[in-house]
Image (cartoon, rainbow, N blue to C red; front, side, top):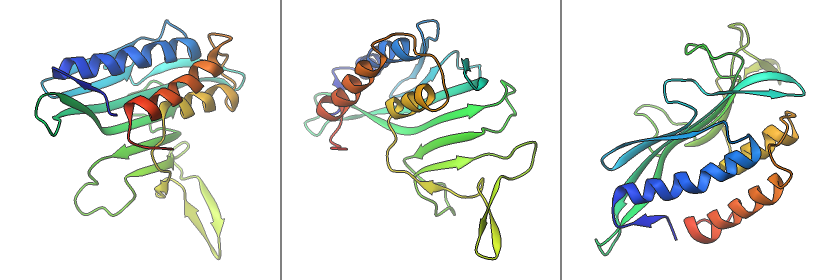
Length: 197
């Protein structure tokens, strides 16, 4: 069952209130979730909307992590309530907090692929390093990994948070971080979504 509410703001608040403790247990309560509502739409970010993201320190050095979600609410079929939907998300890792910086890696979703584009709505991309494409050998040539929209399916923020802690070496803010992530994923599939995996 998707998140619903009597008013649009209730839907946005339910999602923000769910996500806040998950981020606090993994990355720390100093990183606040901001939600900017505009009628039936809302922009949710980790850290102030004016910043590219929040600085994290890991065993591999520091980096900027960006979490952005654009949400909207639509009327339920019976017309009595509002239902939350994700219009877009981007989870990204940057080398610096320069607003013109290109993400080193990112997970993207757009509900509507821009006109003239044919790539997958859910995808992963690797950015350029010092303006140069990261490439991989492929047959007799090279693949520019920044131009590949590698399909992913729907990526939960909990999966990206686990990646930050286990693969990139960010120290978890709470010893219970793993059970918090597992509970959050379970809640997503059982209460917030019609998806099963």
